[in-house]
Length: 403
Image (cartoon, rainbow, N blue to C red; front, side, top):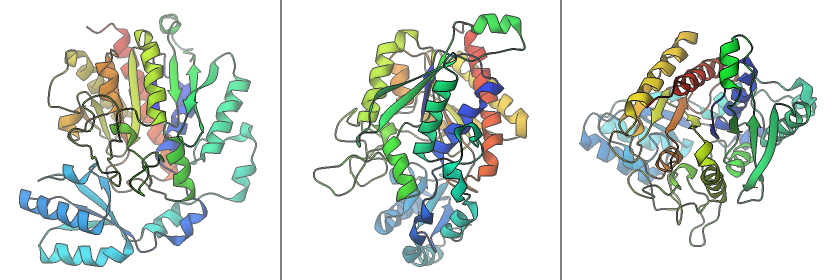
């Protein structure tokens, strides 16, 4: 999901859009995936030495585990919190190996299938309910999200304009909402915000998101085909033309961090890049939302260096995470992505910044690993409430004409 635009106010009226964002970050469950995750575990390790990190990388490659964090095996190093989703047929071998190597670990999820079943809330009536009764506190399929967007476009035409910026690899429309938001409580603020607006793309990776509902709950890449490998998809956040396929990205099509055959190879990335290029003179800020880690990140991601407008961006981030914490006490870390999270090349955040958009941020939403990619629906609203306050603070900070 991508969120970009020339900022306008964040008010309670904007909360439903944030609730929609969480849907795109935490895919649903179609028929509970034919029990395919029964016995799977999620394990957390933190290598204490570079030797342990090397051994962990090796075993991850051998067992072909699903790495939840960090982004890729190459980013495992001493002190890196590492969450691994292990298939049931490989968990015994991994745990035995860790015990013999005297590497400390913690089991975060004992049985992934049971957690999925516990979190399932998809009674038959949900798919048949009216759009006027759209529930913002449950996860929705791509079809439901897009139907809701069409409904908003039809019923709130004075505030929202919906349009497509292209097609995905599998031919799905890439919809964007241009939103004019109201701010009722402060006349001065209302006057200030009259000339600002948001472009909102609730679901960026529409093909991958749909696939996560129908086949693989933890699918993250696009769904493009590769002529030489059976593995499908590209990491859409490593496919941008900024230090493409450098550190933190993989050239192997079967890796989750695969950068693609060339920059902007993915039609989804190409469409958004073209849109941003066309409108960049009028775009003040670009925000993207991801899961999970509880971080607010800004450039650079591909290198350890200080951006020219660091003072303003750092101040905006500081105020945003403080505002976020004031709601429910949730603590976010903030800073340059390379040093706060890890080095990764080809990201949309870095690309937007290098292409003239002065304020670019990436949110890594709740949580820090207890639920991981399985954030319960009961946490959708509190997550969105605190996140939107952070976005509002970023917006107001940038409106002060930071240098």
